[in-house]
Amino acid sequence: MTKLWDKGYKENQQVDEFTVGNDRNLDLRLAKYDVQGSMAHIQMLQSIGLLTKDELDILMPALKEILEQAENGDFIIEDGIEDVHSQVEVMLTRKLGDIGKKIHSGRSRNDQVLVDLKLFLRDEIRQIAADTHMLFAALQQASERYKSILMPGYTHLQIAMPSSFGLWFGAYAESLIDDMQMLAAAYHVANQNPLGSAAGYGSSFPLDREMTTRLLEFETLNYNVVAAQMSRGKTERATAYAIASIASTLGKFAMDCCMFMCQNFGFISLPDELTTGSSIMPHKKNPDVFEIIRGKCNRLQSVPNEISLLTTNLPVGYHRDLQLLKDIIFPATTEMRQCLKMAAFMIENIRVNEHILDDPKYDYLFTVEDVNRLVLNGMPFRDAYKTIGMQVQNKEYNPTKSVEHTHIGSIGRLCTEEIARKMEATYSTVFCESSH
Image (tube, helix red, strand yellow):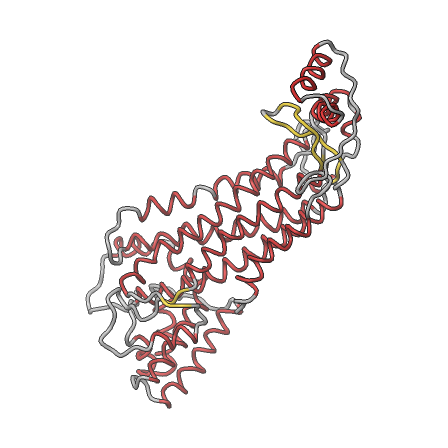
């Protein structure tokens, strides 16, 4: 197997297969970022005299060809090639000869993979943010569409007070703003340039790290070279916490949908073609999409813990354990995006039951409303509470069945526009203004 660290001896095949693992397949997702990092690096090398202008002019078009292959999905890591870094260098050397070998000056695979991962995670976070923003919009649209339709509110899973579909959909929309802020924090962690830290202790070459920061459009550097290497694992963990935050919100919403579709509730339904059936019960129309979203989101909430357990006792410097982070975080970003897209699609197709409260079993929802009416007419709260309580106890309660909530964030004042501005304050500022 071709390795950048080859020193003339052949390693044991069992050791090689065990240590490389699934890394070659995962590295395909890093290919375009590896090439982008190399393009910035060689421009910097030319600026400090480690490459000539003629050599740069030969290398850049060759790297652009490889970048195009990577972006088109045509890039492969050949049998016998250890990783994406080796593949790019082999391709250059095969085409250009010894000039291709010069791209590694002043670099280690440690900072090479770090810059690949930072660029990759920066893009993944931006895409997850866009998908989250799309789900937010779908929830807000549903909140406005059904803002006048009342539904039961629960505490302890017992009938409590009137709610509305506007409140329900809108609550999950606003909750996503907290998740967007987590994404923004992870984005800032990822958006720092580690290139030039080499193996974690810098280089004797006069590397211009500010130049590569500009070329790769990072917002800042990981200045301290040891801190740059310590960001391996930390960047993945920050991303994982943001994903877990979204998964918590989305998983809870999916659980609501499964419960509300149950015939015992009957609050919402889906078109037949968006449900699945039973092999034995001909009447079944199952909410499998929401169940899968719920399951995936529950699993995604374990990702920060898995990363923490992998990295928690590692001392300073690089360790091969860190390679395993790709096995954890790469599938997580993919699953998160799939769940967000599918949830937005399903929300657009949810049908709401507009006559839930016609059922007398929901009459007690209005006890608080009637207590408040007595208070507004001058009765002390405790007396009003006891009056309505005794009516319920004696089965004499007759609900008024009208709701007049007008304060900020209530049934009658959802503040949809204010919540949208709150979302844009994070999303547009961080992800739109920093678009690459």
